Length: 423
Image (cartoon, rainbow, N blue to C red; front, side):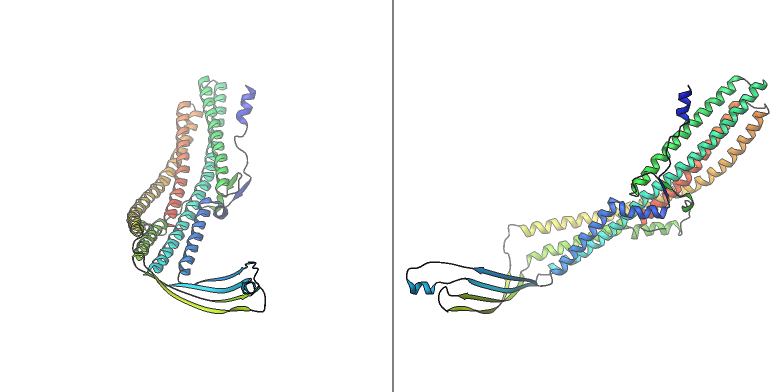
């Protein structure tokens, strides 16, 4: 029995390795989040595609050099003198498309739109990572507050057990009062262990999302959980629907798809290409002083017009049209989803704010009720059951107040993630 009590008395959680502020947590997470890293990679890829689209308007320049040799033996000296020896050559070549029927311009517009979509997606991923960090940060604070609630409950229950024992010794109560007070004290210890375990889990989750990889505590003094929005609800909805990162990404995807359709249709027109170069060559004779060599300029203009390519052009246009239709449908649905998410987030925020007010009022009333019941029980005017009922009411009200405060903070963070900016 003594061993069991010692196990129950042992702490269910370890102390955190470090405590950080919310700003530091967000800074660490920006470098540790795989979603943000993927978003940055998408931006770099889109930037590279932009460079390729610009490069299509510029000439392609190449340097070439060659060397060849042939050794063909001949018994006839006159013929042997005429055989060629090693051949050397070097030169610079350049080519450029003069006319592509708007294909290059369409590809450039598509690349610009893809870059815009990638930038918006990066913002979305960044604020998604911020949301994960803020939720983890608030969960640590929530667990810390629940520990305080459980510790206060444990202290009250220990005092109630002491009062019940004194009354039993004085002959003014029954042993069942002591037993019931003991059961309540055990329940309070169990609740404290659960709260401590929740704190440990939340601290390690915060360590994971920040990339620190260990137990991390939250600095309570550096967080303002309940902050009103700086604008009316209607303006918040308009901001999310018109300028949220998911909406901007969907808009840019539609622009890219339309430009891709234009680029695909350009395949029905001819392509005009110009090329030119300058080369130097030398071909000394195998035997004798004869040397053949010189330099040369060349310039060529050509037209390429595929008459039939096995329906590849038709396939390209069909695929581009289908992608454009899908992108348009996605854009419309993204706007509807953004509005629904904004309205849902505002509703959760407003409900949480009202719950905070109601829960704080309930805590005040429950504390007064418990104070009255404690006084009545000590005076012998009520039973232990009345006191335990008031205790349970107060614990529930305190837990509801903690939950409401942090639900408000999470709802606010969700709105910021939808808006892609701090509110």
